Length: 374
Image (cartoon, rainbow, N blue to C red; front, top):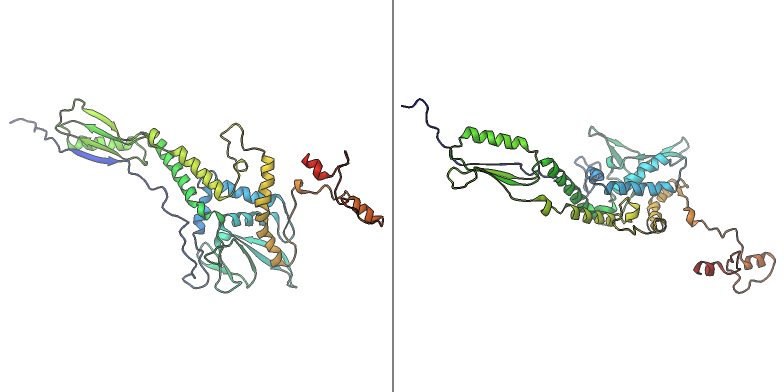
């Protein structure tokens, strides 16, 4: 009898490695409705405010655009004793991200408001009674404010009137898709193999111990990622190659990363109504985005003026002019110091004449409108 027991060939071995990982599972777009909290003190927001805050860092466009809009509000803002620059800076970002901003009123002994402070929108809740507000603390407890002590400015929502919702809600899927594409691409580079494949061996004498060692070595050689690979050992085969690697996918030809990123970028610019030249996007053509100065003028006319209006609503709540904005330098009327012919005639006690209301340029003595058109 032989001293060594004959090695028994093992059965065919198959195992998988590199399980795909879910990138994002929570969607802040899920509309939860507006309901009273379990304790019945305040209403819950219709969407996850934490989810909206996390979206700020989801990709390279969404968060910076919201900060750009905040800066555009601040650029022409005139600070006052009641509403400071720092307070409006935080409130402007709250309004852009959450569609809500809150200010606490501080009064003197005579009941006059002497200052306001911004309250963080992410932790503010509307009470079940009008004018009642709560602030959530980290330990789960709440701080209740006095009735009508809090100013609440909100973006309109057609489904409820308790809280506001940001304007970009319809484009959240583009933000999520852009993040998923970016994370997937990172997994692609950190994966090491850069593709899924089948590792095939043809060894009838491969035992369980050796198969286990191969499995451990292969798993250790790859970073965890989104690519699933397969190891197979076939005991009886006529194959000429003892070891063979069969690729089952090539990320370089099937990955539409660049296309997805370009599409989501355009969707995010659209959802924020942002001109690409103002958002830091690099032009792909030699002509660029055109005259940025003219684009800024149009953007101010169509967007920034409307963005300032919610903040001017603070004045109505305070009963005084606490928030105001300067006019852009290009909107200043240089003709205010120039008198028309009729204005001069009225000062001299003369009757107005036809065409006397036109403003004439110093050179050429022609109407200013005709000079601009010419």
